[in-house]
Every structure is written in structure tokens, then in C-alpha cells.
Image (cartoon, rainbow, N blue to C red):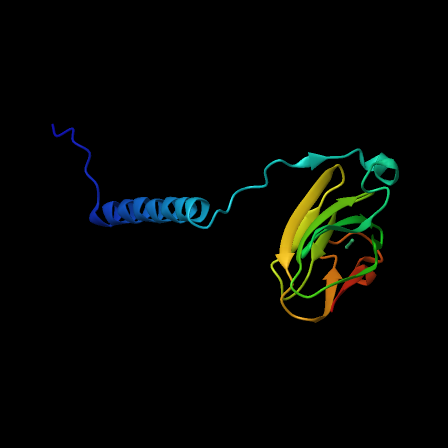
Length: 159
Ligand code: CUA
């Protein structure tokens, strides 16, 4: 009796394809993490979502100048607005946004930039961008958060 496992040719090909895809995905992830410096969110900050209004620096949301050309902006997302609603920064600025929610899940998306993050109650999302062009940028909430979701927006004036 022949006990060796007999595999159909198509099955072998399919297995090879599976291993090949796995190798490609692993290579992609490795390349992204080592060469492009992409990583999962780390050093994530937590916050009590019921005490956002009393927790520095979110008790005073807004723009902080860190050094020439470097800014930090603290945002509180709440149904159905961003606080601050509009800000103004000089062109060429490197801006790090820190966003938290005092109620439900929101989104923080600035079209035409790489800024795109979810805003989860209890957590501080952070994302950076260098504004190289003047103009008005829109901030939109892109996570459905309730009846007024489509009106939840803010703006950034780059001068
Ligand atoms: Cu906030 Cu949708």
C-alpha cells in the first residue's frame, strides 16, 4: 500500500501561490517598517473621556508654537464640532495634531494631506503634517457619529 500523500498538481501550485503571497506580504511589512519607518501607533496617550474639559492641555484646546516653524494643535472632537473650529498657521509649518473625543467615536481627516485618523474616546490620536502650500484646508469628521455628522467640520488657514 502506498502511504505517501498524493497531491494534485493544481493543489501544489495553489500552495506555492499561498506561500509566495505570504512572503510578499512579509517583505512589504518589513520594508515599510524598516525603510519607510511606518509602525503601529506607539506611545499612545490615554485620557478620561468624561474629564476632557478639565484635563490639560485639552482644557485649553488650540495652537501652541513649539519653535519657529513647529506647532502643536490640541483638538477636542465632540458632537458635532471640533474645538478649535478654525485655526491659522504660517505656510511651511510642521504641525502635530493631538485629538481626543469627549463623547463618541469621531474621525479627523484633512483632504489633500496625509492627515487621517480615528478619534476614540479615552485615547489621544496624534498625526503630523507639514503645510507647504497656502490656502484653506478643511477638517472633516469621517466616522459616522450621529445625526449631525455631516456638519462636523473645521478649517485650517495656511498663510
Ligand atoms: Cu463626528 Cu462624524
